[in-house]
Image 1: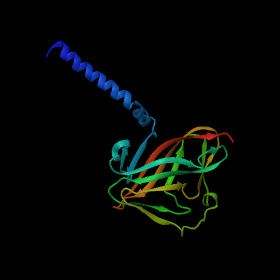
Image 2: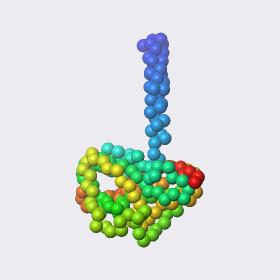
Image 3: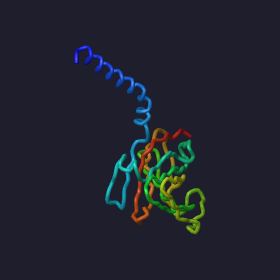
Image 4: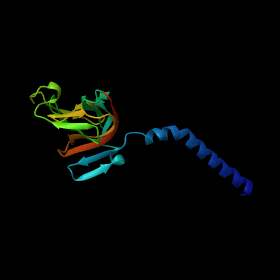
Length: 187
């Protein structure tokens, strides 16, 4: 091959690569700024980070506070969408005083452990039922563990690490931890 032919081939490759990066940049940037981290734990024996279960597993999507706008002094809960992206059915308990969702916060929130349910919910576990999610199904979950409240005590950006506990079809206990950031407003 001649110098001119090689030069044309290399120029074409460079131009194509540059244009591909230029076109894909907005999509790549969205991916980089997406939710910070996800961790999966099965029976407290193995920990898998981020992409380990992207082809199968349980995912927490659209995590946010309830109410969505939190002011200093407000009590709030955590809401998320659970997607069963695994090949088997998963299950978890749900009811007015039971929640398989919990969170820890880096700052600005006080976690209080009390005797009764959040915001006057019925304190009986009679209404508790087992939710089963088949592969591909999703459901919205909300809550704090029984007797636990989250109260905003200072304004500013806050990172919550949310844990969702569930059971695999085999009976093994599993959980997923995902972090998200929200802003607490002045009262």
